[in-house]
Image (cartoon, rainbow, N blue to C red):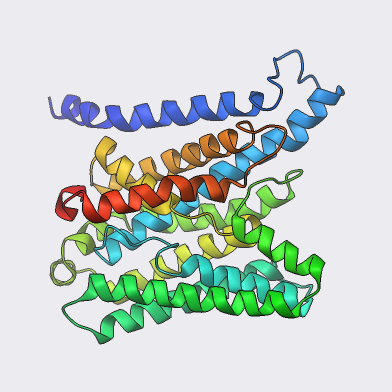
Length: 333
């Protein structure tokens, strides 16, 4: 009977997995021109487009959506704030500033298999987290308001520095930074996918490993300590993991906003708030969600493409207001 009840609880998660698999299978065939199985045979012009452009782009969108969704879920649990995401906390802006500085100084190096731009983006995201977290701790009793204001302030400051860097640079690198800030997963080949895969995989492993601790942290930090959780160590590992994911993804795709807010909340409505299932649901649903957004962005005004970051921002703005004004935060969790 217990096993049957557990099976019933897993039905929504299984449905999310099926939805994600269906999205991954269908999306590469959809575009300015719909492709059939006969069109994508290797060696044909359509086959080259399919295997070298559409498949890598779909994989990149899934990895980016999964990483951003998991990062948003982690921030929301650690800070106990339904509006906490890499975008609203300034983490994406910090990573963007790191990537912009790498481009501005003309560096070209790698560290332990990571590209230099990923190292700079990771450093920027880590600095943003430390600043926002430190400012929040300075104001006891108003953590939600202080955190959002600190995140907005940090984000605006970093974006102003990026604009100053753009103003000083030549047209080509300045336009490159501007296009990157819009967010996109338009990759060619599997090189960027191979770079993002280990970062997202490692970050996802850490987040899923600490799923029980996330449940306790979301309830109350004192309760987590009473249950034997080393909250300082757990938070440090989670911050490193999320910074690694966000930094690496921003270095490749640019800042793609609001995925880390929308996907976790939608998943809570589907699979529940238990992070042992929610983490898997967020990873899979977030990836599929961004794949759908990217499919829409490259087909709605074809042959012109809309940066996927613009699409998620158009969806995320109303969603943010809905969370802020139209719901009681306790019910979301």
